[in-house]
Amino acid sequence: MKHAWITQHRDSFPVALMCDVLDVSKSGYYAALERPESPRAIRGQRIRATVRQIHAASHGIYGSGKIAQELAQSDSLETACRNTVARAMRELGLKSRVTKAFTPTTTKSDPTKQPAPNTLDRDFSATAPNQKWVTDITYLPTSQGWVYLAVVLDLFSRKVVGWAIGDSLATPLVAAALRRAIESRRPVGNELLHHSDRGCQYTSDAYQQTLKTLGIECSMSRRGECYDNAVAERFFWSLKHEWTKHESFENLEAARLSVFKYVETFYNPVRLHQSLGYKSPDNFEAEYAPAIAAYFIPPPLSESGGLSQLGRVGR
Image (tube, rainbow, N blue to C red):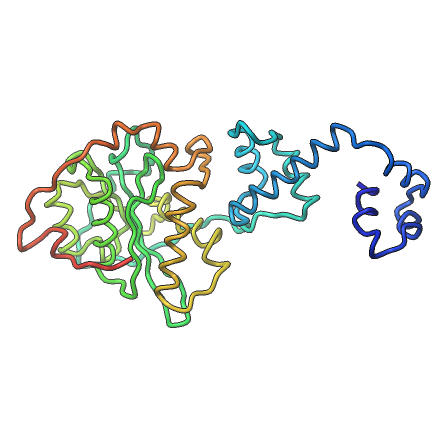
């Protein structure tokens, strides 16, 4: 490594000076330049180049663990254990830009509404798509004020199956996210459990009527128990610490574009999840394609309820 450092900086400092400071024999350094590189050194170069490539492709998000998993899953890349990848990252000066620990947050409820029971009960497992969905809302800052993001995730694959962003925290925002989830997944209503916190948007009469009309069972977190909806909370933590905290948004449209890039071009199709055996949500679901092909046609929606009555919020 000393020889490599000297070679890298020989245009900036005298070789003799660097050899003296690093306690390297000058003649030994020049002799090393004449020797062909060892197979180990050549492999190290390939690993460093590949690590740099994967780190850049993950937008600086991946650390040594996920980069090592990417290498292990590839037929064409140089494989390396996590310790080797970590050493390569140190040599390259690379770090994951995600450093803060995950801490869930809570949402204010409407004390006038009767919440649904906590049927999910922190059982975040699912044996097939469209068995259990979780949903939540978060805030994103822009130069023109706060904007609000609602998402729906399928617990089977942790995939974001519906999302909507807007400048209002009212019920139509969460309804728009649910609408997109229904349209993209077409679940069998009476086989689906929908879980949220006790936020007033989810306990609203309009939203509850939609779930009832579609035959979807409703589950809600207990008061003050943020871990009851930990998967949705975790997604927002990933979104912010991997992505949005490294950007600044001028307005709603800029925030919408950034969320689209994260969800549709990285999180769903690319991002590795430890809980999925280091697969992305899309790749994990590709192994279960027959179940996703199942669909249902929602019953006719009345004038008093259903998705059509909840308004639309554009992405």
